[in-house]
Amino acid sequence: MSKISSAGYRFPEPFTGVQVNFCKNIKCAAFGVPETLHRVRRSKATSSQAGDYIRSGETNRPRMKCGLCGSLNPFRSNEAIAEELGRLSAHIFDSREPCCPSEGCTNHTVPVSALGSYVRNGKTPSGTPRWRCNACRKTFAGAAAPTARQRKPHKNRDVFALLMNKMPLKRIAEVTGLAPSSVLGKIRLIHKQCMAFAGSREQQLVQGMALPPMYVAVDRQTHIVNWSNRKDRRNVALTAIGSADLVSGYVFGFNLNFDAAVDALTVEQDALANGDLTEYEAYRKYARMWLSTDYEASIVASKSRKSKTKKFKTADFEEGLRQDVTGQYEQAQDREDIETEDVDKDVALPSDGVQIKDQYTMHGHFHLLATLLQNAEKVRCYLDQDVGMRAAFLGAFAERIKQRTADAWFVSVMKDSTVTQKEVAVNRAKARHAEASAANPALKPDEVNLLLMKEEMASPKEIGEYGDVWLEHPVPNMSEPAKLVCWLTDFADYDEDHEARLYLKASLHSIDRFFMQARRRLSMAERSITTASTARRTWYGYSAYHPDSLARTLEIFRVFYNYCKPGDKDKMTPAMRLGLAKAPIALEDILYFEA
Picture (spheres, rainbow, N blue to C red):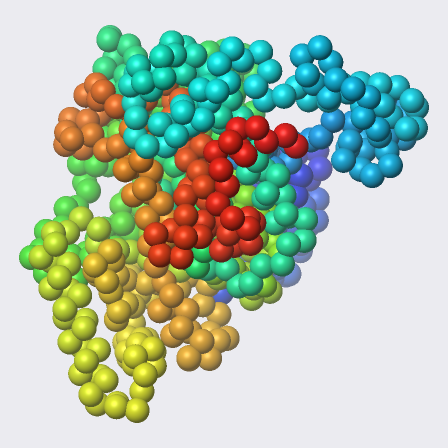
């Protein structure tokens, strides 16, 4: 394991502005403060200061111990997080316009859209626009048209529409008369165009577009990819993290923990040659990627821990939710790395591309979210209960949290419940609301909600090792019939009414609605009709056969959902509500989009 870097760092160095290794205790003066360089020595008489950390724990599972509060936190590779952020944000920052190819020209980095820098100079035989540079007078070709070299470009829209309406790939080929290989080729084109289109619109968010206070729900969804080796009939389970605005419904990211651009065999061989396997994860060259050796070792470790996992059963609906919250904390504490979920022995690594470790995709996602929402007045994130998700949020938003322009809450919802259970819980809440309204006839319904929330705030319950304070949400609905909320960034500096309103907004509905739509509209994302345990080794006809096909389809759907699919009531798309579009976008406008 690396000891001290040449720059004096004991822990992984910051990388291109990414630094997530610091005290995560928001009540500590060291919260958000990176380590003091190792060459700075303190005398024995000097007390610890913010930025003083020591490495604690076992050699293979060390922790970062804060010198002030003593809290222990896993630490991550900042370089690996920056790599993951680069992968997730490539559609925004790598979609460059053509420019003069002459390196010595003053227009070498100036895009063709810059007024007065270029003039059109006809087209190539294939129809690609040509440009002449006004500075050096050289001519060059721009980017080829999206449909260049396609024999049947008129089929693109059909494939796009059918894919977004739950048509399996074989049926798309049958309906359109295309060969399966041609369908896959058109999906690759559709994906490329969707990412270019979304990148051009989302660039506005990072180029100064003003945003109001943003309320964002964040959750994860598991997707199954069929096994491809008859000798190992374990399916591949991948996780997509998504975040959606509670007001507009706009989905800022739907990121799968899979990278198709990397060859797994090459990584495995290089990791063996460069000694990666002998280093602790955070110091590795391939820190963000699952290596087969680590994966199999994690299966063994997870299996031993699962035998100790407590199962909670209760007939009481709300009590069952509280026990679930408690169980989540206990399972996290039982893991070697509290931010890393256990590996299931019945799932395997993909044979093509590489699977990214969940915690690195989560860190990359929250850094992407911080980038997209940098111009928002305030950011309020409502997170599904996940210790790794909390760490990723704190790592990306630490400075804004200290400036009090960013906050986060855990939201735990009883999702697996019958219609009868939901109705009982909602009717109970309605009866309580009616009773409070009768006792306070001068109050409006929203004011009664505020009153009920304040009553809950007066009797919080501490759960878990961190002393997290949880409240019961007094206004549930059928989609979230029982709900507990925990404020993770409570500095006790907001007035009571402000706190109550923020608690009342707590919901995962916007992202869960998107997840539900993905399940209903994408054949690859549909749940298997088999049970969760048997699905791990069952060949499911509608699931993807290759992870990259699933990844492309999910990203295509995010763009379709944001820009093309208007709501039933207001006839507006999420992009229209957010201000990134003026009308629903036709599929053709995406297919033939040119930067």
